[in-house]
Length: 222
Length: 132
Image 1 (tube, one colour):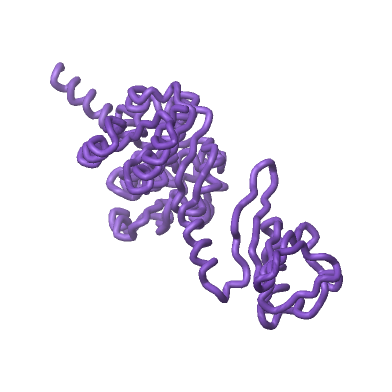
Image 2: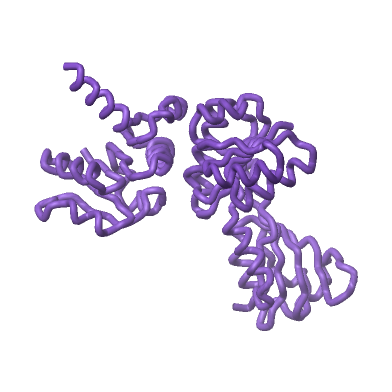
């Protein structure tokens, strides 16, 4: 597979290295001459110096035969334009953009970027996960195909109205599914109607985004 | 006509003043309040502090009722992105943007944008002057 990476920062550099080690034909496009030289010394001649937002540079990079273009710079606008040039000028089948401002994710999709990776939200979610008092964490987004589902980790907290109640006696939001219950060091199990919730229970659930607030109320007790 | 101008630098402010004097309803947008010093005291339009890439800011600027949108910030890619948001997400009828880099010329054609490159225009004008 021929993959073009845009931006030789920490992310672009590490990604290029990983792709090369997986055996992909990979080219990195970087604006800064010094950065370019340094990478070429280290990884072999795989870095092209230039601005990937220019069609001439992408033409030189052979973007026309690329399978994927991944834009990893720290500037959202630059990532958008690089992906659009690849998509609309060179018909690259799959474009992936790093997005730093969360609200840009939707805009990018509307403007033709195939996949967006929101680095800010990912870091936020990871940190939230490590804050032990946090009763609800988004683990993963299962969106696409007109669905907007999330994989959630929920912790049954003190004051929750479900404490001591069974699943049958609890009104879970209609479109939410509680898939797995993890309790102490027991083997994780699928909660059944007669499963009674206990303090500290960890629940893995799949739910639409709009059910999140209701789940939060139910399990956090706040 | 209701016009939103993103970027209240020398060009943006000048345009805002001209359109305002002709009786159009103008909203000037900039991320730096200091830029609005370029607007004269008798400017009748609005000056709004905010990022023109933010849909909420654009809505506050009245983009849903705007007839025209002009993107003239200092950065080409910001202009390209803002122009597309105005054109494709808010369906503004007339959208124009400035792109300094003439090498990006075929980009606007590809994206269906109307853009002016001051670099190219000025170079051509200066050359004409020399030849006349």
